[in-house]
Structure formats: structure tokens, C-alpha cells
Length: 395
Image 1 (cartoon, helix red, strand yellow):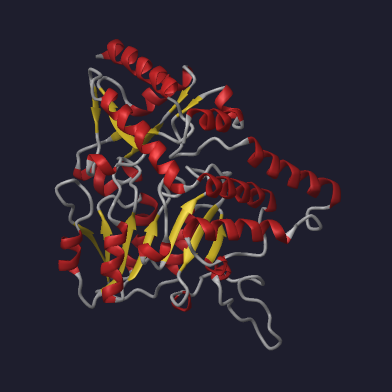
Image 2 (spheres, helix red, strand yellow):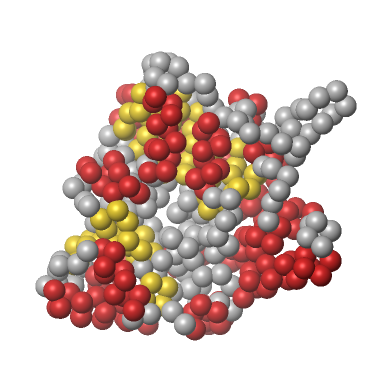
């Protein structure tokens, strides 16, 4: 991805004119075309009637774009209001849970997923943490030693919210397939950063939010459910879309839309469709290379700042676009607010986001820089200068 292309992408992104944005892991900046797609749909609804303007082709576009992104069939894609909602629906449909059932998770599991799992634990299931290897990633050899007939689910947060780690999702999928164990991937931070091929991952369920590195609107998420695994999942909530009337009764759909409802924001799906198509045109491999190059340089420079401590995990040549750090004398939320006053957006995470890992590493909070492909070296210079000045203030 050359500089001229990056400048064209930035010129087509209104937020780039007003803010330096390094919070793509929270929510990224949408393109002008994504905004236009949503506004045009809202205008059609306002002038022609909301129900009458519900163009089915928009949902079809979004579903096919999501399928292209994941190397999946369109019938295996469902949309939801958030990644957490999608994951929760799939998890709750996997029950019932029995005493002695085992759920294996990485130490970096997203807090929202763990909260959902607590219901299974209350029913008698055991939640067990897979040990980490020497780099801090989920250890595949350790996972293999934990497998027995009681393991009902392996759950992985592919890219944790509080470090640059990229967990070995494909290798874990191979273990799950070998033993016929359900495998769920939280790809919330991976979609839009890395190539994501559900065939290679060997996962049964994968979910991710539209608002993060994919640059879609808030209130959108996508979920993949593997064909053949779908019949094992009975949603807790059904309506006339997910279980249509078929003459003598209601019948649960035989595609992933059994997790959708008849009411949906077509405007949000119009925005998501555009964002997914833009990503697919750019290409996941090129985006990954651009993000990795920017982050490698930024990590090196951050490591030279006095009072700043990086909290990276994983091999240095395989890290993601998330950079976790603390700055001496600064609470992470306070630091985020001070940078925002300078027109620089970053993130800040507490223990609740990744509780098992934060507690294991003795971290109360972290500040987080999340880099996207349309960030620039010049923006990194501004961020580094600001952090250097703030470090001196309280160092």
C-alpha cells in the first residue's frame, strides 16, 4: 500500500480532517461512502416509508461481502447488533450444560464472553484456563494435554484487547477438529486486520463487530456458523424470520439466519455492506502488511520514551495493531482524556475487559494505541511528542 493510496483513503475519510485517531480497536473512522450509504437509506425511509424502503438487496450485499471476507458461504452468515450479542446467542444455543462439562479458554478471553459463560458454570460446568507458552500466547501442547471426553467447548479470543498478541487460532482449530470439540473464535480485533479464512481456522462459530477495524457502523456485527454444526444450536429466542410458519407449524431455519430477527436496521446494514466491500477491495494481506509495518516502527519508538512501559505479548514478528502500555504517573483513563484534549484518540482498558490476563500480569489498567492502515508516520510523530510531554509533567 503506497503513500498515494493512503492519502486517497484519508481524503475519503471525514474524521481524518478533525482528529488523529488511534482507537480503531474501539471503533474506527468510517469512510464518506459508508456514511452516504446509511444516509441515503434513511432518506429513502423518510420519503417512501421505512417498511417500503427495506430493500432486500442491501442485506444480500452485506451477507455476500461478509462471506467473501471469511471465505464462507453466504448462508452461514448472520448479522447481530454487537459481537457480544452474537457470541452470547451462539453460546446459549449450545446448551444445556451438565455438571462436569469442561470449557477451555485462553487466559486472554474477552470479559463479555466470560460473563456469558458464568451461566454454564452455575449449571455445573467447569471453566478452565489453557496455560500460556513462553511468549504469552495460548500453548497448543498444553491444550492437547487437557483434552478428554468432558471438554464441550474450546473458546479463543484470537487477538486480545489488552496486548499485541495474535493467538495460534489455526493450530487450536486443528486440535478441536481432531477431537470433535466445538470451537468458538472471538475475532473482534482480527476482522479488518488479518486475513480470516474460516476453512483454515476450522472453527464452528466466529464473530466480530463491524465498528472496529472493518470501519463499519456501530450497532453491527457478523457471525459465521459452520454448516453441519448449525443443527446443534437451538436459539433461545425465535420469531417469524428465524422460525417461519410452514403450513402446520413454525420451523427453525436451516441457515445462520436462525439467529436473526425480522426487525433490523437496513441503514446500518447499508453502511456495513459498503465497509465490507471497501475492505475486500483493499485486500486483507495488504492491510496486514501496512499495519504491521507501522506498528513495528511505533513500538520501537515508544520503547525509547522515559516512563513508558509496553505490555506486549507474543513473538515480536507476529504482533497485531494493538499496542498496550502504561505511562508513569498517569492513570490510563486520565491519559486518554488528556490526549483527547489535544485531538488524539486512544483507548483505555480496565481489568473487566480481559480479567484473567490482567490479573495474571498484575495490571489494573492499560492505555491502548490501535493502528489502522490509513494512519500515518506524521500522526505517530504527534502522538509520540504528546506522550513525551505528558511523561515529563508527572515523571
